[in-house]
Every structure is written in C-alpha cells, then in structure tokens.
Length: 338
Image 1 (tube, rainbow, N blue to C red):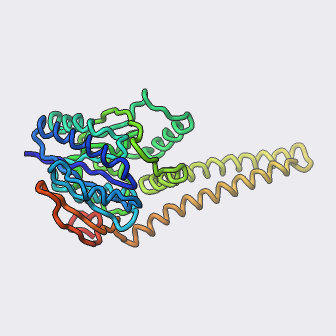
Image 2 (image 1 turned 45 degrees about the horizontal axis):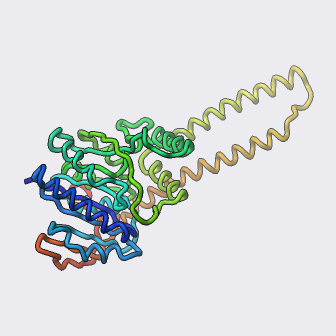
Image 3 (image 1 turned 135 degrees about the horizontal axis):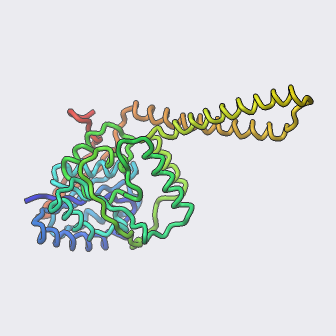
C-alpha cells in the first residue's frame, strides 16, 4: 500500500484550522477508498503568534497519523516547506498546500490520478488565466518577473504555478539534496526536472483571517527570488551599460563634428545635468543589485541552518505520542548533510 503525506505550513491560522481539517479528513477518506492510500498529515507551525500550535495538538485527526512541527520563530514559508519535505521524506508522495483553504484540498484527487494513473513525478497547479481577477499592473509585473527569471535557463518556471502540488519521493529527495538555505522553492521544483503535469485551478476566498503578505514583502520576495535563482538582472544591467556607452560615443562624435562645422559653444546644460542625474541613479541601482548578489553569497557562506525546531509532536493512529524536543534541523546535503 502506497503512502501519501499532506504537508501544510501554518502561520497564524487558528481561525482556519477547523475548516481545514474537516475538508482534509473528507478528502483523505476518499483517497483511501479510491486509491487504497495510507494518508498522513504533516503541519509545520512557522512561529505563529496565535494559538495555531496548541489547537493542532488538541486534534485527533480522525485517527490518522500526523506530525506537528513547531519552529523556534518565524523562518518563512520556504523553510517551512523544506521542513515538511524532510518530515515526510519516507512517504511515496507528498502534497504541499496552504492552510488558508485558497488551495482546495479536493484537487488532491486530480493530483493523485496524475501520479498513480498517468505516471507523473510532479503534478502542480496554476491559476486559471480565464478566471483570474488581478489588475493590469500586477499582471504586467508577473509577466516581467517570469520572463526575467526564465531568461537563458535550460528549464522553465511555469507562470502562476505555486507551491500547491504533488511530489513523488524521488522529487522530494532531489529537493532535500539542495545545499542552499536561501531557498526559492518554485525555482527548485523546475530545476530538478522529472515528468511534470499542470492542472488549472481557481483560488478560493480565505475562510478567515487576512493574508500576511504586503506589497513591500512581495517586492522583497520577488527580489530574493531573482537574486537567488538567476543572474539575468546582472546581464541586463551590463547590456544596458553597453548600449549607453555606444550611444554616448555616437553623441560625442556628433558634438565634435558640429563644433568643427558649425562653430560656437554647444548648448543644453539642463539636458546634460538631467543625464548626469539619470546615469548616477542607474549606477546606484546597479551597485544595489550587485550588493544583493554579494549579500546572498555571504548568507550562504555562513552556513546557518534553514530552520530551528522548538517542538515536535507525533500523533499515531491510537492517539498522541509524546515527542517534544528541541533541536537544530536543516535541509541535508547529498551525501550525509552539512
């Protein structure tokens, strides 16, 4: 009998847990009946400030095995996903999903069909373009982001594909073998390859609570993703500098020819000052971008763990088992870990 684990990061989702468990347990029943799977649940509490962890520990999960991992603080979703993959590494397949129920648990049935009946190693979801309700500016920025991050790559990170997906055990092990701690999971899913299938879905409204992502945070995450997974921005800046150098040379030649043929002093001090300010700003932008890459290298060189586990509780089919522990945990390197 094959096993399937649901991996669900939790961050201040106390109000959503009851609804989430109702739908998860219903889907687990259907998966067990239809595909004869052993289903278990893995929750990663990413340093929640509310009662999410205590509420999870009080659940019986319908008699199914479950594991609840609590971080020592908020380490971010990428670290939580990595911890979940590590905790469920022995399962035949893992389904990653959010706790806010914008990822419908019922889609797991289609994921499992793609895995067991069609032989795919990774089945991922993407937002249905026909049903998306986002502004023109956000759509443009999304298009620009994916065009940039996929520039010159030998693999493609699908647009609008998130963390809601099924991964088989070989894919999970390949992801866990990645040594970096500044992780961009959407990029790593594409980098490891394997046979992949895409399934469209429409995000559901949040049952309760509000999103913890703000525009400033989304911008920071976008910058982290670009500088963690591609050098395309550096290439674009180098190309921009080359173009400006060529144009400046041509303009300089024009000024010299005009001075020799027409005479007089060339005018345009305002335009010159404007150009100086513009290129000064571009230089600062280029230096800042370069600093981001250098900073990423410094963080990786420190070799700190991706996350620290404060507490871990394992719940067997017969009830909770004492499993509280404090330990340092991290994504291992291939060949025995860091």
